[in-house]
Length: 282
View 1 (tube, rainbow, N blue to C red):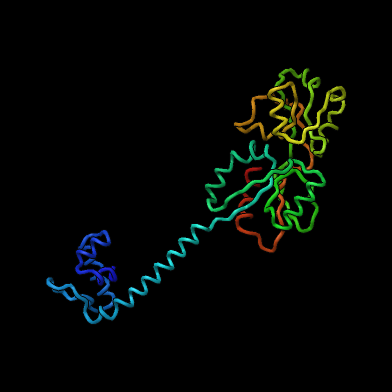
View 2: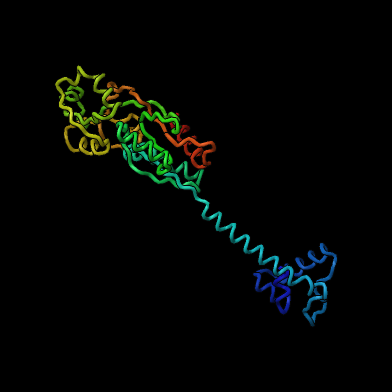
């Protein structure tokens, strides 16, 4: 306030420039003079001028305030740009029916962490697992959420719970379940384990290979089909109106996990997101 008052023709003009009352300017100048134990302005109603002490101090304070303004501007820019981005590989169906509905909670807790998503299989085969491992190691990806078996000393893992597969269909009759074609990803260890578990029931059932759960669900809505899904998907408000058969649900391996590149010190954003994932998976 002092540097503005020093450049203006009166306290009234300084008050107008600052958007405050003249009395407020006067009080601030008086408080500054008391703190410095010196008079900065002549107390003459006819003349608004600085004392010798004020004249000495004014240019120094103006320089200091300019430096302070520049420092604050840089701090604001850093604050505005202080957004950490994490790139996460996840299956489209898992993002749509499990993670997406809970992301608002994470963003409210960590508004400066931006999440970018790329697609991957729910249960990657050996070739995709190798590719995901390489992408994590070379920092093309920050995290992978999948039912995968990544055995690499440079890759860390946090479990997110077992996967319970449940059949769903637009057919409501249990007897029709084993007569209707099933859409199953034979490359998925989880779904292959399910097929093995119910081999006797599926002996006469047409099994069609489908490596995309979202596509399988789309087909199941429009045709007499059966799709295998993670049971937690059915809790999503966006899950299609299909009949679930929980009496034939089976827990399979490997379990769902989040994978990341091991470092001596992980980023705060990565730790925050993995801890949050573990929390919502309980």
